Length: 144
Image (cartoon, rainbow, N blue to C red; front, side):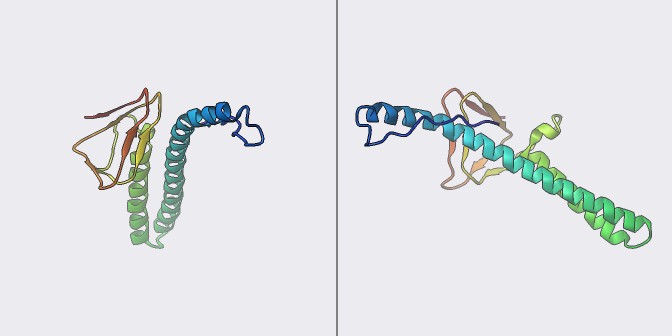
């Protein structure tokens, strides 16, 4: 994901171009915010995937130990933890399993659908108190 470079900031040392540079910077901020929000979503999804991969690796190690007769209970617990981490990773990044899309029942943090993107959620949904769902220009959100 890329974030567009912001135009140069205005400076009182250049009063002739101050207004034009200020307008250009303010005009670019909406795109910058949308791109930064999209990047944050992507980074969070990848963090969940990395966590899930670590849990799966630990589960495999524990399962190997259990097969050697070390501790079958630990292997079963690791498997349950790995499945929970994978479920969380799928919920955060549904593209991992395109046949099943998941989302929580409550939107608990501010969400912005960036310009040029469509989003959908499965309902019913509750939007938490003080939480904002923002749709940038040229974006849509559907609740199915």
